[in-house]
Image (tube, rainbow, N blue to C red):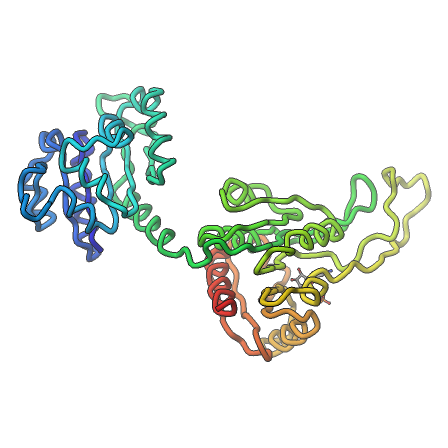
Amino acid sequence: MNIVVAVTGGIAAYKSVHLVRLLIKAGHEVTVVPTEDALRFVGLPTWEAISRRPVTTSVHEDVAQVRHVALGQAAELVIVAPATANTIAKMAAGLADDLLGTTLLATTAPVAIAPAMHTEMWLHPATRANIATLRERGVAILGPDDGELTGGDSGPGRMLEPEQIVAQALGLLAADEQRDLDGLRVAVSAGGTREPLDPVRFLGNRSSGRQGVALALAAADRGAEVVLVAAHVDGAVLAEAAQHPLIRVEHVGTAAELGDAMRRASEDAAVIVMAAAVADYRPADVSERKLTKDAGPLESIELVQNEDIVAHLAARRHPGQVVVAFAAETPDDADDLLERARRKRERKGVDLLVVNEVGWERGFESGENAVHVIGEGGAVVARASGSKRAVADDVWDVIADVLD
Ligand code: CTP
């Protein structure tokens, strides 16, 4: 990949030598664009040797090649590291008084900056406002870290380590490339329903909601507009999804509430993903007041069956709408797992059924999962394992194929 590494005038410039080395070692073509000031910290020969390319700061060299815009046009990624307060201010204002300025204005590639400065400068309202402007324009702000700074101070302002900058900047690009679900409306349910017995007790299940939330995040990162109907989800799991600009979270408690919310969300959704663990039964009576032993021993709880939400949504789906169900099974063996999944897919009338094996020790609170995806005719159309996010992306790959 063609990467421009812009280096500005801060002591952290020495770390960018390693940054360039890492990118070159990973097989990328790197053009270094230092500012005049940056060359006071690390000289031109170092940049040329390490990047194996000519390096200049001037817009007046190589005029025949229109170098002042050519670099930006050819770049697939621009990393500014370190980004000083001065450069950040110039970027926010759109100044183009050197090769870095013209390159930044001429590029349509993703831009990531790794700020480095003293804490006071980082926290100054001018810098805060400039950072907000850049963020609004889609520039990725990597760091800064909180740590020791030159001169013995410490606080936020330290440039991220080169390894972190490389990982985050390349990750950004991967996310940017994969916008294959752009504008697709999807409804995702996640978490375990809670069926109240009285104001303090409920019948629930062990679902953490992690897989469902990962599915919502994966879709949104790929450009989909997601309604996430969240039953009970473990504490921090929901936080990231709730902040995502393309995800709207609707909180529900019971299966009946989840059913209503999913019906609403499904009206204009192209894809329905039912990852929630829905209670099949609810107590027939919900006591208005806390059940106490004074009223006599409670020997049994009468239950009534809940509606099968996904079967209902599948039966009423509009043309082209894709419905995906999940199943967590405790099978005898691998064949039994697939048999159960095939029967469940038929019974629910869904397009895809994602099945995993669960037990006392596996499947719930873990960050990992291993699934089979059953499609048309009961065929195993995909197998996926790894982090719940990786599994979510694989499931969306299958859904995207079905949508095509
Ligand atoms: N589901 C649903 N409504 C219910 C129960 C389940 O929509 N009342 C959905 C789940 O969200 C999931 C799929 O159906 O996508 C399978 O859930 P599961 O509990 O395995 O289905 P059941 O029909 O309850 O199967 P079993 O008899 O094995 O419990």
